[in-house]
Image (cartoon, rainbow over all chains, first blue to last red; front, side, top):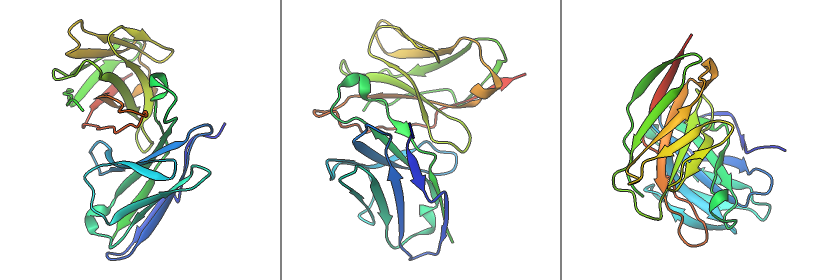
Length: 116
Length: 113
Protein backbone atom coordinates (compact mmCIF):
# COMPACT_ATOMS: atom_id res chain seq x y z
CA UNK A 1 0.00 0.00 0.00
CA UNK A 2 1.65 3.18 -1.21
CA UNK A 3 1.58 6.04 1.21
CA UNK A 4 1.42 9.68 0.24
CA UNK A 5 3.71 10.45 -2.66
CA UNK A 6 4.95 13.83 -3.84
CA UNK A 7 6.83 15.06 -6.86
CA UNK A 8 9.31 16.39 -7.54
CA UNK A 9 11.60 15.79 -4.59
CA UNK A 10 13.63 18.94 -5.11
CA UNK A 11 13.08 22.00 -7.26
CA UNK A 12 15.02 25.19 -7.90
CA UNK A 13 13.21 28.20 -9.33
CA UNK A 14 13.96 31.86 -9.92
CA UNK A 15 12.09 34.77 -8.36
CA UNK A 16 8.96 35.63 -10.33
CA UNK A 17 8.56 32.18 -11.80
CA UNK A 18 5.65 29.84 -11.23
CA UNK A 19 5.81 26.33 -9.81
CA UNK A 20 3.49 23.32 -9.63
CA UNK A 21 3.90 20.62 -7.02
CA UNK A 22 2.05 17.31 -7.12
CA UNK A 23 0.67 14.94 -4.54
CA UNK A 24 -0.99 11.52 -4.63
CA UNK A 25 -2.86 10.63 -1.43
CA UNK A 26 -2.66 7.38 0.45
CA UNK A 27 -4.94 4.68 -0.92
CA UNK A 28 -8.45 5.08 0.47
CA UNK A 29 -7.98 8.76 1.35
CA UNK A 30 -10.04 11.48 -0.27
CA UNK A 31 -8.86 14.65 1.44
CA UNK A 32 -5.58 16.40 0.74
CA UNK A 33 -3.95 19.20 2.70
CA UNK A 34 -0.86 21.24 1.86
CA UNK A 35 1.64 22.69 4.30
CA UNK A 36 4.66 24.95 4.02
CA UNK A 37 7.56 24.28 6.37
CA UNK A 38 10.34 26.84 6.61
CA UNK A 39 13.67 25.79 8.05
CA UNK A 40 13.45 25.31 11.81
CA UNK A 41 9.71 25.88 11.93
CA UNK A 42 6.70 23.65 12.20
CA UNK A 43 4.52 23.05 9.15
CA UNK A 44 2.09 25.87 8.33
CA UNK A 45 -1.29 24.98 6.90
CA UNK A 46 -1.90 26.33 3.39
CA UNK A 47 -5.22 24.78 2.34
CA UNK A 48 -7.23 21.59 2.16
CA UNK A 49 -9.14 19.97 -0.69
CA UNK A 50 -12.07 17.61 -0.55
CA UNK A 51 -14.38 16.64 -3.39
CA UNK A 52 -12.31 18.81 -5.72
CA UNK A 53 -13.08 21.96 -3.73
CA UNK A 54 -10.97 24.05 -1.41
CA UNK A 55 -12.54 23.53 2.03
CA UNK A 56 -10.21 25.36 4.38
CA UNK A 57 -7.43 27.89 3.88
CA UNK A 58 -4.64 29.20 6.06
CA UNK A 59 -3.08 32.67 5.98
CA UNK A 60 -1.48 32.45 2.58
CA UNK A 61 -1.85 34.93 -0.30
CA UNK A 62 -3.75 34.20 -3.49
CA UNK A 63 -0.43 33.42 -5.20
CA UNK A 64 -0.92 30.01 -3.62
CA UNK A 65 -3.61 28.02 -5.37
CA UNK A 66 -4.47 24.40 -5.73
CA UNK A 67 -6.52 21.81 -7.44
CA UNK A 68 -7.84 18.36 -6.67
CA UNK A 69 -8.59 15.84 -9.40
CA UNK A 70 -11.32 13.19 -9.51
CA UNK A 71 -8.76 10.54 -8.47
CA UNK A 72 -8.10 12.64 -5.31
CA UNK A 73 -4.59 13.64 -6.35
CA UNK A 74 -3.75 17.29 -5.93
CA UNK A 75 -1.55 20.09 -7.19
CA UNK A 76 -0.19 23.13 -5.42
CA UNK A 77 0.60 26.12 -7.62
CA UNK A 78 2.62 29.11 -6.53
CA UNK A 79 2.82 32.17 -8.80
CA UNK A 80 5.27 35.06 -8.76
CA UNK A 81 7.73 33.23 -6.54
CA UNK A 82 9.49 35.15 -3.79
CA UNK A 83 12.69 34.25 -2.00
CA UNK A 84 10.58 33.68 1.12
CA UNK A 85 8.71 30.88 -0.60
CA UNK A 86 11.76 28.68 -0.24
CA UNK A 87 10.61 25.85 2.02
CA UNK A 88 9.65 22.22 2.29
CA UNK A 89 6.13 21.75 0.95
CA UNK A 90 4.28 18.88 2.54
CA UNK A 91 1.18 17.13 1.37
CA UNK A 92 -1.01 15.19 3.79
CA UNK A 93 -4.03 13.01 3.22
CA UNK A 94 -6.85 11.61 5.32
CA UNK A 95 -10.37 10.29 5.00
CA UNK A 96 -12.49 13.38 5.23
CA UNK A 97 -15.81 12.06 6.39
CA UNK A 98 -14.95 8.80 8.11
CA UNK A 99 -15.29 9.93 11.69
CA UNK A 100 -13.06 11.09 14.47
CA UNK A 101 -10.77 8.09 14.62
CA UNK A 102 -9.79 8.63 11.00
CA UNK A 103 -8.55 12.15 11.50
CA UNK A 104 -5.03 10.83 11.34
CA UNK A 105 -3.22 12.66 8.62
CA UNK A 106 -0.55 10.86 6.67
CA UNK A 107 2.21 13.06 5.31
CA UNK A 108 4.32 12.70 2.23
CA UNK A 109 8.09 13.23 2.20
CA UNK A 110 7.72 16.74 0.86
CA UNK A 111 9.10 18.78 -2.01
CA UNK A 112 12.07 21.01 -1.22
CA UNK A 113 11.61 24.27 -3.15
CA UNK A 114 14.50 26.70 -3.43
CA UNK A 115 13.87 30.13 -4.91
CA UNK A 116 16.94 32.05 -6.04
CA UNK B 1 -7.65 25.78 17.55
CA UNK B 2 -6.06 25.90 20.99
CA UNK B 3 -2.41 26.89 21.29
CA UNK B 4 0.08 24.44 22.75
CA UNK B 5 3.33 24.97 24.62
CA UNK B 6 6.18 22.50 24.49
CA UNK B 7 9.79 22.63 25.71
CA UNK B 8 12.08 23.32 22.76
CA UNK B 9 14.37 20.38 23.42
CA UNK B 10 14.87 17.31 25.60
CA UNK B 11 17.45 14.54 25.95
CA UNK B 12 16.73 10.93 26.82
CA UNK B 13 19.06 7.97 27.38
CA UNK B 14 18.58 5.07 25.01
CA UNK B 15 16.38 2.38 26.54
CA UNK B 16 14.79 4.77 29.00
CA UNK B 17 11.29 6.18 28.85
CA UNK B 18 10.96 9.53 27.14
CA UNK B 19 8.27 11.74 28.63
CA UNK B 20 7.36 14.70 26.46
CA UNK B 21 5.07 17.29 28.07
CA UNK B 22 2.60 19.58 26.37
CA UNK B 23 0.55 22.41 27.81
CA UNK B 24 -2.82 23.20 26.24
CA UNK B 25 -4.54 25.23 28.93
CA UNK B 26 -7.10 26.78 26.58
CA UNK B 27 -8.31 23.50 25.14
CA UNK B 28 -12.04 23.25 24.50
CA UNK B 29 -14.25 20.34 25.41
CA UNK B 30 -14.49 19.12 21.83
CA UNK B 31 -10.80 19.40 20.98
CA UNK B 32 -8.60 16.36 20.68
CA UNK B 33 -4.91 16.14 21.50
CA UNK B 34 -2.75 14.77 18.69
CA UNK B 35 0.94 13.96 18.59
CA UNK B 36 3.08 13.81 15.49
CA UNK B 37 6.80 13.49 15.06
CA UNK B 38 9.11 14.52 12.29
CA UNK B 39 12.37 12.76 11.71
CA UNK B 40 14.93 14.89 9.93
CA UNK B 41 14.08 15.52 6.27
CA UNK B 42 10.89 13.48 6.38
CA UNK B 43 7.22 14.39 6.57
CA UNK B 44 5.51 14.35 9.99
CA UNK B 45 4.30 10.97 11.21
CA UNK B 46 1.12 10.49 13.21
CA UNK B 47 1.74 8.91 16.62
CA UNK B 48 -1.39 8.96 18.74
CA UNK B 49 -4.40 11.04 19.72
CA UNK B 50 -6.91 11.26 22.56
CA UNK B 51 -9.80 13.24 24.00
CA UNK B 52 -9.79 12.66 27.74
CA UNK B 53 -8.90 9.06 28.42
CA UNK B 54 -5.34 7.81 28.38
CA UNK B 55 -4.45 6.07 25.15
CA UNK B 56 -1.82 3.52 24.18
CA UNK B 57 -0.76 2.07 20.87
CA UNK B 58 2.26 0.24 19.53
CA UNK B 59 4.28 3.44 19.34
CA UNK B 60 3.48 5.36 22.51
CA UNK B 61 1.18 6.19 25.37
CA UNK B 62 -0.71 9.44 25.82
CA UNK B 63 -1.57 10.64 29.30
CA UNK B 64 -4.07 13.50 29.50
CA UNK B 65 -4.67 15.23 32.83
CA UNK B 66 -8.15 15.19 34.27
CA UNK B 67 -8.66 18.90 33.56
CA UNK B 68 -7.27 18.32 30.03
CA UNK B 69 -4.99 21.32 30.30
CA UNK B 70 -1.86 19.28 29.70
CA UNK B 71 -0.72 15.94 28.37
CA UNK B 72 2.38 13.78 28.22
CA UNK B 73 3.55 11.57 25.40
CA UNK B 74 5.49 8.57 26.66
CA UNK B 75 7.87 6.55 24.53
CA UNK B 76 8.44 3.58 26.86
CA UNK B 77 11.86 2.48 25.62
CA UNK B 78 13.46 5.20 23.53
CA UNK B 79 15.77 4.15 20.74
CA UNK B 80 18.12 6.22 18.59
CA UNK B 81 15.49 6.10 15.84
CA UNK B 82 13.14 8.06 18.08
CA UNK B 83 15.34 11.15 17.73
CA UNK B 84 12.97 13.63 16.09
CA UNK B 85 10.91 16.77 16.59
CA UNK B 86 7.68 15.96 18.40
CA UNK B 87 4.62 18.11 17.82
CA UNK B 88 1.65 18.33 20.16
CA UNK B 89 -1.48 19.66 18.47
CA UNK B 90 -4.99 20.23 19.67
CA UNK B 91 -7.78 20.61 17.20
CA UNK B 92 -11.44 20.16 16.60
CA UNK B 93 -12.89 18.89 13.39
CA UNK B 94 -15.70 21.00 12.06
CA UNK B 95 -18.69 19.43 10.44
CA UNK B 96 -17.75 17.06 7.71
CA UNK B 97 -14.47 16.10 9.31
CA UNK B 98 -12.34 18.72 7.62
CA UNK B 99 -9.12 19.32 9.42
CA UNK B 100 -7.10 22.45 9.84
CA UNK B 101 -3.97 21.56 11.72
CA UNK B 102 -1.78 24.15 13.38
CA UNK B 103 1.73 23.03 14.26
CA UNK B 104 3.95 24.86 16.73
CA UNK B 105 7.72 24.50 16.84
CA UNK B 106 7.62 21.21 18.78
CA UNK B 107 10.13 19.52 21.08
CA UNK B 108 13.38 18.27 19.61
CA UNK B 109 14.04 14.95 21.35
CA UNK B 110 17.62 13.72 21.25
CA UNK B 111 18.08 10.08 22.27
CA UNK B 112 21.59 9.56 23.59
CA UNK B 113 23.41 6.21 23.34
